Image (cartoon, rainbow, N blue to C red):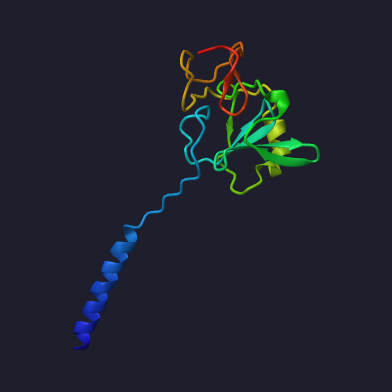
Length: 154
């Protein structure tokens, strides 16, 4: 009788471990913007060296220093309203977890100065009539920081 109980308990444990092994965790932190770099769907933050700001994929907000504090907005500051997010370089923050990427702002600003260009970046999407990527060019294409293009008609 005890042997049957042990066998049943053993079978139950095996069955339970099989059920747990099939459990998977899928964490979706947000939908990256079309101007975001391709191949980084599980990253929460980008650092934008040209505007010295961060982009939070999870909340779809830009994070930048304004006055005496870091602020979160769906748009870039006024002085960057014509900044081209498609052609601007994005530093993908693969090694940061938390809610305040600006904790390391001094290091980011020093390592990735304005005008920084690392290796070629292909964007997730592209504007019709334009190449899909981030190459140093003439910067004629305009974006106001919230995905709406201004300037040339497409």
